[in-house]
Length: 395
Length: 210
Ligand code: B1M
Image (cartoon, rainbow over all chains, first blue to last red; front, side, top):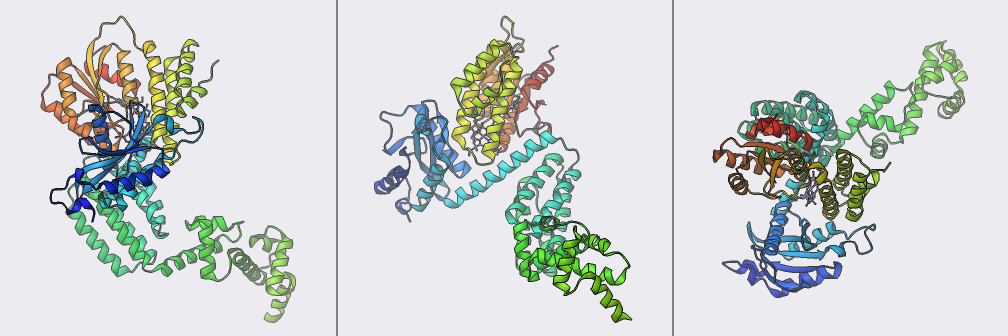
């Protein structure tokens, strides 16, 4: 508990000087800035390394505005003041009440310590550090700030989709939806939460953008989306019964949703529950993926496929795919692929009258020499003598 | 012929001395104001992409924006036709909670160039201030700009405030990167323009000019 929380009528002027001194001292160790405590109206209370003289009214307004912006975005954000200074701030809060803020500032010239064409001070880091320091002292409401940061990021993604939509001029919400759906399902299958969240935001933005205020239309899309997500989760290894329950719960919740604002948190909750259900059976998921990889390899044996093609076919990154493959199959991808090609060739040697060259080709070996060598290594004899031997056995 | 790539670069790096002198040079070399503006906007877009990828932060955007605003000011006289009797008065501003002003400044400049008397209220303008300015200047057109998805509700609140005053036939035109025609319809604005050039046509249409 900090000193402010013990007061019945919390007031920022009661902020313990020693706490401020500690924050200021530590912060100034890393950053060439001034730092002060202000009231909600921007009035300065304590300061270190601050500029001399009284602040004008506009200046005070600006400091107050900065504190508000720090709250609004959940992270200090730099604003420019006509006196050529840059400011950023963190609100001091008790529960949801803003008691004031801690503002840091620097001269514009200090921004580029080694010249305009050199990298400037890392103010993103400076902003983040100020917040963390104040959070550590328990002087702000970290949960509120975190929520605002998440909202800001979501809005930023939404803005970017809107910009794209305006550029692309795609018509028809269904067409847009169908474009995003496969991507979402594949990230869900892979258990990639953050990418799934991003795509969900994109889908929501697109649907809301196109559907305007036709809320029932939006709801019908949502039902379709949730049903598809559930199906995918079961395919990816989630327990069918659990997903059925989830689906029911989601649909019931959707029925009581009345506004666009409630939709995003609802859909995100659906996604989280689904991801949890898949994560509860990790081995089911990955063995399914590997099974479909092997099916893909079998279907494309005659083609010059490589690891990257197969990884792409099952929507995994090549390195992740390699690891997963080795874990489940017990041997590396290339080794397995050659084994499969040789097995296929062996089958053709027995069942067909194709020439050795044709069989090498049909099994995906580009060079006959390499085919002969691989075959010999795995089967203990050359293709020709293998064919001979098998024919003799049959006879 | 002069290469406008240098101007784009100067905007991108926020080098305002260079940006302003290159703008002047481009004007002296008889390049069209539109092509000069386009080169600047490319610079802003590039810095926006870098911000998106976390390669730059707010200060870099701030100085790029300032270089752009100062260079635009040099262009203004060649866009604004002098000696015209203004056909009507328009009020323009960026809505409450929003500090982005380049797009709004562009529209404002284009409007001045098309024989409108423009009262620019700046950024972070409250609905009350818009209403007061419309009354004070007897404006027939209001332009609202918003660049953040989170300030689109302020746009709605402003439209509502203006409509509730029943100000005689003042038209509302909105614009900004996240704003769309369907949003304009939704909030009851009279028009939407995707860019500054079409904001001139829309303004004239709304005012019944031509
Ligand atoms: C009246 O009728 C009309 C008609 C047409 C109208 C019109 C009105 N208004 C505009 N138009 C139209 O005409 C113009 C072209 O002809 C166009 O105008 P534009 O304004 O679109 O285009 C200009 C010519 C050039 N473009 C711009 O000027 C905007 C560029 C980008 C990079 C941008 C900048 C420069 C800035 N920013 Co900020 N900024 C971004 C922008 C990214 C982007 N791609 O848009 C955007 C908008 N910003 C964003 C963010 C997140 C933020 N910004 C912030 C701050 C700033 C600066 C102040 C640093 C600076 C603006 C400086 C200034 N003086 O304007 C913060 C918010 C501050 C606030 N309270 O407003 C902050 C929150 C960042 C932070 N962490 O602090 C993002 C928005 C996210 C969202 N939720 O919507 C953003 C899309 C960048 C991103 N990819 O993340 C049309 O839209």
